[in-house]
Length: 333
Image (cartoon, rainbow, N blue to C red; front, side, top):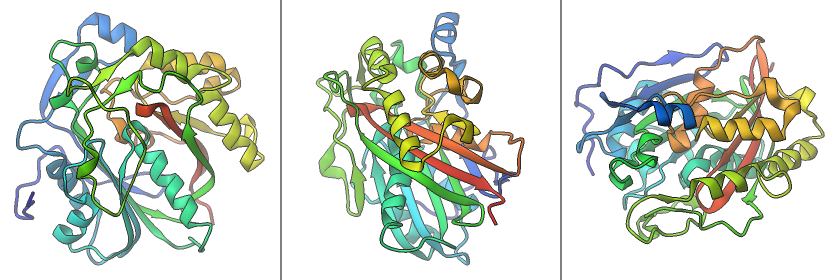
């Protein structure tokens, strides 16, 4: 798909400078659906946004990214995450349309784990070369609405939109302390299925195996996914223990924990299993599940109490893959 730079920028998109030093822009479609009281109480989502037919993933990606990326400011690393591949490489498209100078770029297709999977990939690059001084950018563009059954519970959870982060300068205002990721040890990895066409993934990309949908629509066994995620021995709690141990850190060393913002019920379940983190959990689900953009959106809304914070980011979702990454943000030097 061709995206033309002369298109008018939607009025809802603005460049913002976060107190921790990075910049961000959020694209939110103007079509809003307000949830009923049942959904609000069960998962904490008050409203979701629905993209119109012309608001494709590429379109939303472009309008968020153009606000924060500058062709005169080279990027050392750019990751573009989208749950549903389109047959085009989105990072390449962004580079071409905005005229960006990018050294390393990659598309990410890992559903709700997209952000942490991208950070894990960056950490792996750091094993072979120094990342100090690298200028890092991330974009998540998600459009789930075509794959949600009207009137279903899932339709009241997922929201469409895009978010872009820039000016994450490694060693200055951003650093990865520890990262790990793998499929959760559970027999229920098919409890969440998606109509993802893997033949439409274009190199360079990283992805995780997602069970295919049997109906062409998003399919989730909510209670099964919930129990699998909060399981202390095989779910997200064990993943958190693993990344902390690798960093030789404890809960006392973490300022905030930002899990994937899928539902307030899941966050509450994780808090119950991880009481030492109870006061450090960030919940930002009222505007819907933005999939791979949910953690960056929560980070962008965070109001830190210190000039430097340490965040434990945890992404999890389809295929019951999870990735946990400890990051530092703010005045690092």
